[in-house]
Image (spheres, rainbow, N blue to C red):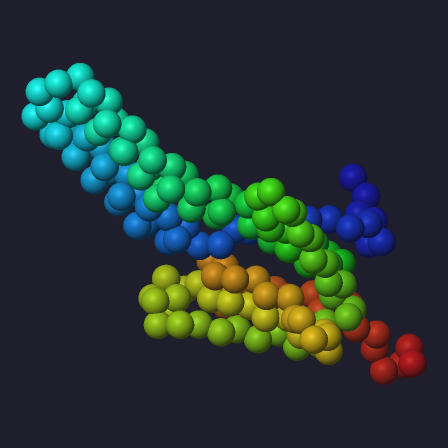
Length: 159
């Protein structure tokens, strides 16, 4: 198998840290337990239907929408570029070639430091930098992007 240096290949595909789904999942478990308890106490059929309808509404708003939002955001790092895709109904796609980026910054909050995640910011001199929000193993992603960007910059002899 030969390696083609001019071909683009995917290095990693990422999503934001799954920590964002913790509270929605807690809500799902609490709603499931509460429905079982309250439906057992209900005396009439309309009360049971109301409990199930309210629970379904809570699950859709509190668990399903956050899950869809988390699933709709993807980051792809290739040998040539970074691609950020997001959106459920309105899709947006942002790309940045490694050769255009000149600065990679890692920003972490207190909770992100505990989970070793963070926001990786790629500055290309534009008004809107490319931000990889809350990526897992953010330090490793930053180092890999540094190496990719450094490898894509022309050396002093080529100028």
